[in-house]
Image (tube, rainbow, N blue to C red; front, side, top):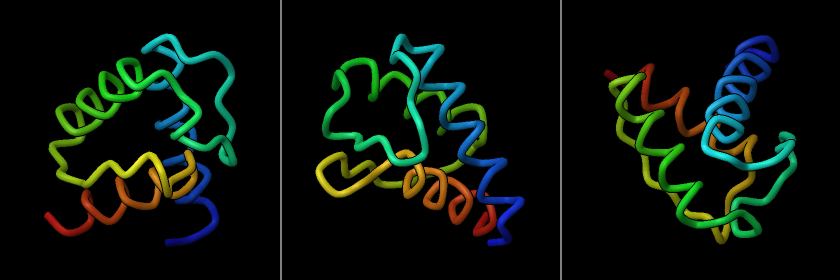
Length: 77
């Protein structure tokens, strides 16, 4: 994953989180600190729109690591 791809996928994830109602997520925002219902909604939308499957582990993930997981899932199809 290049730096440009990392930034691109972080932007995707942050946009989906904002659309779900999470206020101002950043790449370093921990998922465990987010509203679980809103986070799950955003994750389902990402999976659907990107036709990708990834495991959501809020206790150990940030927006940045979620972006990496999304990228891996998209590239592995």
